[in-house]
Amino acid sequence: MKIKVGVIFGGKSVEHEISVITANQGINAIDTEKYEIIPLYISKDGLMYTGDILLDLKNYTDLKKLIENSTRVTLINDGDKVNVVRYPASKFKKNIINTIDVAFPCMHGTNGEDGTIQGYLEMLGIPYVGCDILSSAVGMDKITMRRILKEAGLPSLDYTAFYSLDYIKNEENIIKDIEAKLDYPVIVKAGNLGSSVGIKKAKNSNELKEAIEFAMQYSDRIMVERA
Image 1 (cartoon, rainbow, N blue to C red):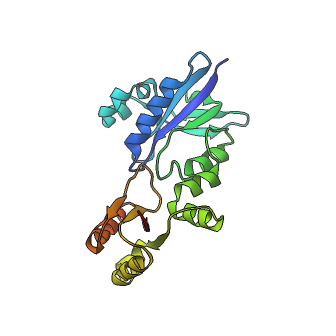
Image 2: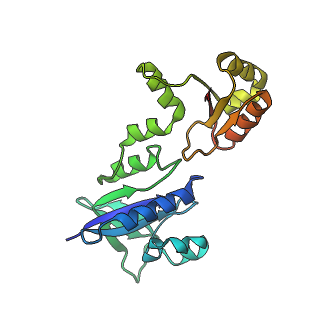
Image 3: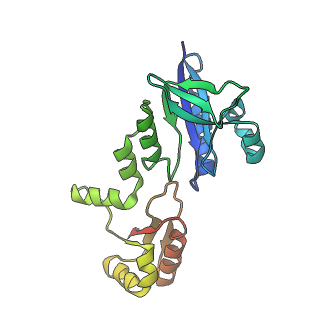
């Protein structure tokens, strides 16, 4: 019997496309003599699909067609196993499409690397590849991670962080505080994204403001650190 691996990818994150590529690379690297691959694609609106069409990267050039030719599913804990179940249920087709023994998250960004999908898999009671909930959450959150590094006495760059709402209310004071704590150039980052999304370098006050406004498009928490 082959071990059934549910490869989970996609999602509502701005890193959706990167996740699809990662999953494709992972799928192509899995030894199909030992493992059965079950693709579990999460669309940009958060719905889960499966089907052989999801195994080929070129099919993702037309997401509408891809979804139309896939089967919408959900995962259900059935005691000693996790079933991949058709959703909504059909009166005329088999509803339990497959089962999975282990999950292989290939998610990027929000709801993927930040502990969210890990918590979902913990609730299902299925073993999964990669970090646990706490490690994922801390590792994904740049501000929390920096605080932990500082608290542990590990060498790390000086930084400051704030909420975007506070910046909207007190832009001038926050800019002054940043410039008092850090010398230019600085790096401005969205607080909780990967793949360099929402990141810009600033060499002066005007560029700093532009970089903050850019990062605010992706996160409500902003981090600024010495370059």
